[in-house]
Image (spheres, rainbow, N blue to C red):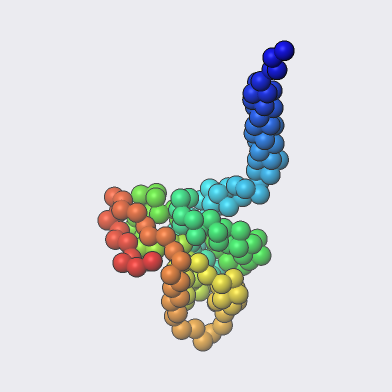
Length: 180
């Protein structure tokens, strides 16, 4: 009497397990898509939620100006923090978000020498540049700078973190930073 080979049985079970794993992964992605893709969604919504820069610099309110790109991993990391700032301060501060990939903002990119992102510029209500943050930043440092926008004694500060994304060459002739 010849015994049957266990190979068809094993192949069938492996196939069933593989299908089950794929199914579980797909269901998990569907159920937790907001968790997995929240930062990307936030970045895409920034442009829609933005105050027009021309209005922001003339309405007698301080301004939070962020230069970002949807492909920028550091921008994605900071998106929840920036969204929290917007939720907390938007009644008293203009929030302007400019995507560096949009040629429409080329004059602002050049004016503020943007070549590493994310770049956050904070302006007082008169439109004077008070702080520039380039790269990944500590939430408390940005919060302190936001809270200091109302003080009379202000001196400019630039804070650069080595964790930032270089702006890719584009039609705006913006040169990327030489480090980072």
